[in-house]
Amino acid sequence: MATMINLVYLIAAVLFIVGLKNLSSPRTAPRGNLLGAIGMFLAVIATLLDHHVVSFGWIFIGIVIGSGIGTYMARTVKMTAMPQMVALFNGFGGMASVLVAGAAFLEMGQVVERGGADPDWQWSLALVLSALIGSVTFTGSGVAFGKLQGLVNEQAVTIPKKYTKALAAVLVLISLVVLIADVSSGFLFFILVLSSFALGIVLVMPIGGADMPVVVALLNSYSGLAASMTGFVLGNNGLIISGSLVGASGLILTMIMCKAMNRSLANVLFGGAIVSESAKAAIPGKEFYEGKVKQSDAEEVAMILESVQSVVFVPGYGLAVAQAQHATHELADLLTTRGVQVKYAIHPVAGRMPGHMNVLLAEAEVPYDQMIEMDLINPEFSRTDVAIILGANDVTNPAARDETSSPIYGMPILEVDQAKTVVVIKRSLSPGFAGIPNSLFIKDNTLMVFGDAKDVLQGLIQAIKEL
Image 1 (cartoon, rainbow, N blue to C red):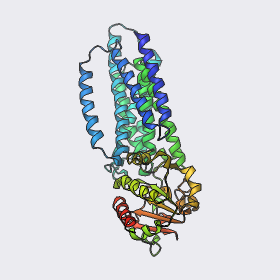
Image 2 (tube, rainbow, N blue to C red):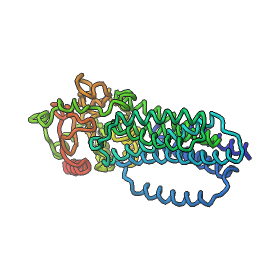
Image 3 (cartoon, rainbow, N blue to C red):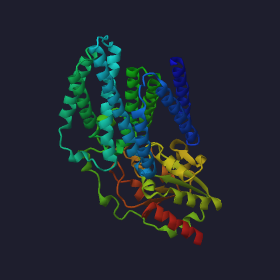
Image 4 (cartoon, one colour):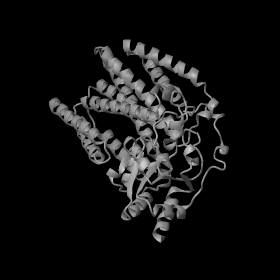
């Protein structure tokens, strides 16, 4: 039986790996998601058939409750809230590892009391790391969720984060070392979990909102590492493999995002916000735009689009908020029928999580071959007649390329300002997550159309049809 279970785990692992490979492309992502789901289904069945499971009653109750909650959330949570949802999932995964580690700790104590042998140091190490990483993941993800949801503001939190972080780290280190040597102390295990909870809070609290996508990706990696450690505690090969894959892929994604933002991981974790409080005073306000912005409307933009040959749409978080992906696709189809070449420029960190724009556009049935990554689309902007910016801000700011004093200098951007005409559809001149003005808005070739992206696009479609 054990051989058969491990064979199923191996098959599941292969499906996970192939699924991850397929997730690297929007075109193959649905297949990758399906393969991963099949792999997880096989792993769950193998685990349920394992002799360690003595009762299925509570498992069945958990499946019913979890399935109901999951179905409700899948149907009600909006695409704009997906980053928060991912943060919650990370937190749940971390807490699951903590609970399993706690249960294993209690079971181990009972075994020793009955005269069983003390666990070796490898098992003890896996146990404490599972509790440590899972606890940090749980509270850190909770803070990330609160920030993305607008429920948590680091400025409103008055705890001395620096000293709290140092105290929590010292308590974690002491508990960790002592428990590895002697894992029998329930008090120290409790202290380890509590201090790890505190450490997760103070680690994520100072990080700025613009860096939250990176933090969520890193916490995803943490949840995988915690699960992998739990696998060593339980002796479950499937959990070890799947947790390791999640940990590695989450870390790779984190590094990709850091590169796309021109920031080191250490800078994200310990540097706080992109723009420090002292630097905010030097940032220009409304005077930056006074007398320099050329405002337009749907009718004028429609006349421009009547005679163009190429258009590149640049989706951002504003498109997600307005749920304008379907209107965007409708406008693109209208232009295509008139002989216009249409493409979509995708920045790695556009929106609030990796792949956010790809998912939104795929939902509107935008062809995958029209979604072009930043490195491939940038050389084409100089040959593009019109670039239409849909709520994207920091990822199109030329200051990242041209102004060495800018806080985002060096961050790779979509070079939309190279297009012959740039149309920016935005609710207002408010800054993006980085909190700095966008010099694109005052370029000579830029037209600003203020309003909800969906409403503006629908007006633009109607104006084109009436020409």
